[in-house]
Length: 217
Image (cartoon, rainbow, N blue to C red; front, side, top):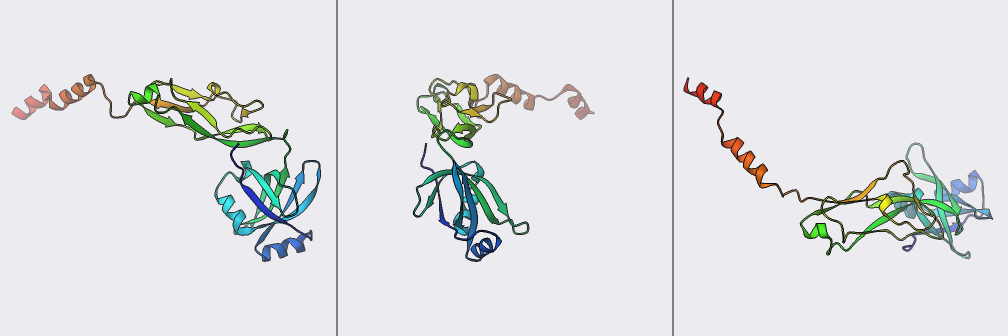
C-alpha cells in the first residue's frame, strides 16, 4: 500500500471534562485510542493539523499511522469525530487500533495502465473514468495500493466493471447489490457518420412544398 498519512499526537495526562477543556484552550483536540487488545489511552492532537486532514475528506475511511513520542507507531482508523454544534469544529476524536487481521472500509484509488497501446484509444476513443476510487472492505495487513485497470485490449465501447477486477485476497467491494462500472472507452464526440451529416444538411436546405405555396400566395 502507499505510504499512510500520519496523525501526530501527544499523551494527555489528565482525563475528564476539565483536561479536555484545557486541551482545547491550548489549541488541541482531545481524543482516545482504544482496541487492539490494549488499554485505552488519552491523547491530544493539534487542532490545525487535524482540521487540515478533515478538510481533505474521507477522514473516517482512511488508514493512519499514529505517532506518539515514546510509543511505537500503530495503525489506526477514526471511528468518530465529535464537533461543536454551532461552529462545526472538531472537539474530540476516537481512534481504533488495528492489527493485521482487522477488516476496515477504505477508498482505494484506480490506476490505468497501457493507455498508449489501448486498442480503443489508438482509434481515437476517449477514456471515461466513472470512478477514480472504489470503496473496499479490506484486511489491514493486505491493503492494495491501487486497483489496476489494464486498457490494452479494450476497444471503443468496451467497459470495465468491478467483476472484471481481480481484488487482493480478503478484499471485496462495499457495493454488493450491482456490478458497477469503473471505466469505459467511449467514441470520440466529434465523430459522426457521413449519412447523419448528409441528412442534417439536406434537412436544412429543403423547403417544404406547403411553405413554398404559402410564400407564393
